[in-house]
Image (cartoon, rainbow, N blue to C red; front, side):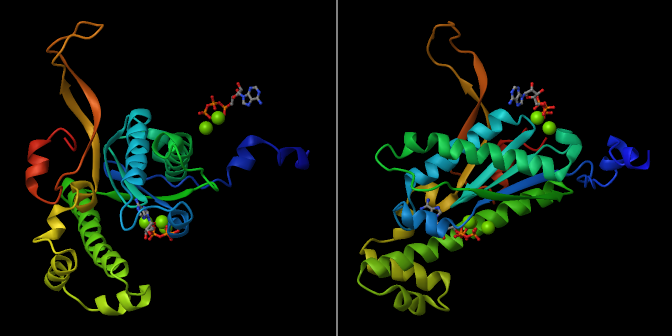
Length: 260
Ligand code: ATP
Ligand code: ATP
Ligand code: MG
Ligand code: MG
Ligand code: MG
Ligand code: MG
Ligand code: MG
C-alpha cells in the first residue's frame, strides 16, 4: 500500500513548486531569439536591419496579442519582444512557467508558419527558437521606465550597427570597424554617419521602424467606407503596429487606456 500511495496525484503533485507572479503588478514576458546572430547570417538578413525579418516579428507579436487577450502592449526590436500583461491578469493563475512557455511556444510556431509570407523566395534552413522570461513591475511608472530602457537600447544598438555596417561596406574589415568605433560617443557617431553616407543628418533619414522599434497594441480604427457588414463610420478595436517614441510622456498621454 505504501508503493500505491506514491502514485497518488496529491503526493506526486506535492513536489511541484508553482512560482506565482506577484499580484497587482504588470507582468512582462520578454522573449529573445536564440542564436539569431547565426540565424540571421545563414538566412542572409540585410545588415544592419532586415525590414522583412522585423515585419515577420511584428506580425507574430500582433498574433500573440490577438490570442492572449490579457496582453495590453508589446514592444519589439531585433530578435526580441516584450509583452506586457495587464496588472490584474489571472492567466494561468499567474504561474510564471506556464505563461512564459505558452507565449514563447505560440510566437515560435507563428514565426515558422508565417516565414513564407515574408520570405517567399527564401527557404528556412533550420528551425528558429526563442527563450523567454517573466518579470513583474509594480507600478505604471516603472513599467514605462522598463519600456523606455528597451527603446534606448534599440537606439544605441542601431546607431552602433549602422556605423559598423557603413564602415564594413566602405571596405573596412569587421575587426577594423569594431576598433574604429571603440569608445566613440553619440555625437561622433552621428558625424561619422553623415561623412560615410554623404547625407546630412543621415541617422534621421532611416525608417522609424529601425530607429524606434515597434509598438503593438489595441487601438480604435474607424471605418471610412461601407463593407459587407455595412458599418460605415463605426469603429472597432484592432491590433496596430506603430513606430513611435514611447520614452516621452506624450505617447502615454495619447493612449491612457493601455495601462489604465
Ligand atoms: P542569444 O541566443 O544569446 O540571444 P543572439 O545571437 O540571438 O544570441 P542577440 O544579442 O539576441 O544575439 O542579437 C540578435 C542578433 O540577431 C543581432 O545581433 C543581429 O545580428 C541579428 N538580427 C536579429 N534581427 C535582425 C534583423 N531584422 N536584421 C538583421 N539582423 C538581425
Ligand atoms: P489545457 O489547455 O488546460 O491543457 P486541453 O484541452 O489541452 O486543455 P488536456 O487536459 O491537456 O486539455 O487534454 C488534452 C486533450 O487533447 C485530451 O482530452 C484529448 O481530447 C485531446 N488529445 C490530445 N492528444 C490526442 C490524441 N493523440 N488523440 C486524440 N485526442 C487527443
Ligand atoms: Mg538571449
Ligand atoms: Mg537573441
Ligand atoms: Mg536579442
Ligand atoms: Mg494545460
Ligand atoms: Mg493540454
